[in-house]
Length: 152
Image (cartoon, rainbow, N blue to C red; front, side, top):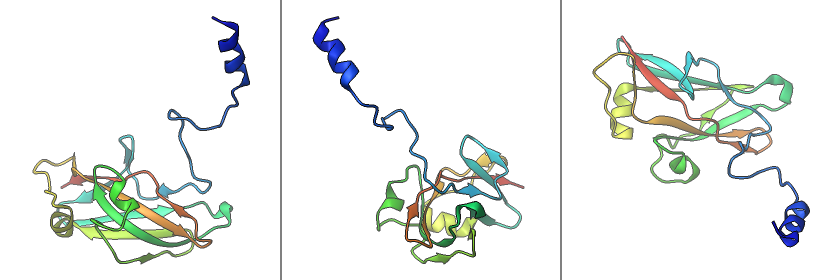
């Protein structure tokens, strides 16, 4: 290796972020009703009721509260939740302290996400739910996507 190459490598500063590192938010968001991780948080939705409920929460120790879920998308990537078109839900969902709950149904999922409900139980919906959360101080967070598994 040449002396110039060695000098260049030693002069590089570590930036703390590259394409291989996770960029975690200062305020972590968890899915309070997650029943599995595939590897994303996964909730179960009963075919009998047709209801899908996703409860997002942040630790009280952060000193922050959840103002709202600002945007929701159902897709295979987070691209839509970052924009203003193609959203699953355009109405703001108000938070309550450190939690906020998103409710929908299989019927609404079929209509809004152009999705289908799998015939077999214990099968995931094809599209995941993505959220843009706004905190009380105006900061926004896009947490991990949430998977939904259909159960009897």
